[in-house]
Image (tube, rainbow, N blue to C red; front, side):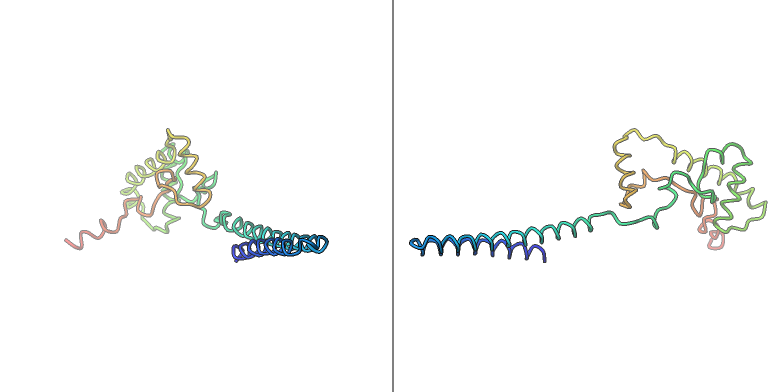
Length: 190
């Protein structure tokens, strides 16, 4: 819409200038009237240029509003904040200090995924969970060699743009305790 207005204003400005020049050429002997016609044509041209400029400014404002990044705060998870929540999915250094700390993390993990295990089942799954927790912690603390690429990925991540999973932090997943349903139910199929 704005581009059509700009084209129309430029066309009107050009037509007004041509009309003023034609009027001035026809009335060579009438200097005052040609001057008045020329002034009127220049006023029309100025007003057409002003209309075109306001239409262009309106279009620029609309484009600027569209190019702003959307508010993605409702989509952001722990990996965008500075402090991870204590929900049993995020692994910190304190969670891996001892087996008791890993066991407490395992209990928080079971609570967050609504898992009900008896102590014997938790003991059987503990070594798998501990391995996955250490792997997740090491993944999240990897030092990237390409600092510029990491900065670009962080900027894209903060804007809500897609980022390669290599740059994202991991959290403990649903089956990190070794409870994959395929392996649990395999004995019933064979």
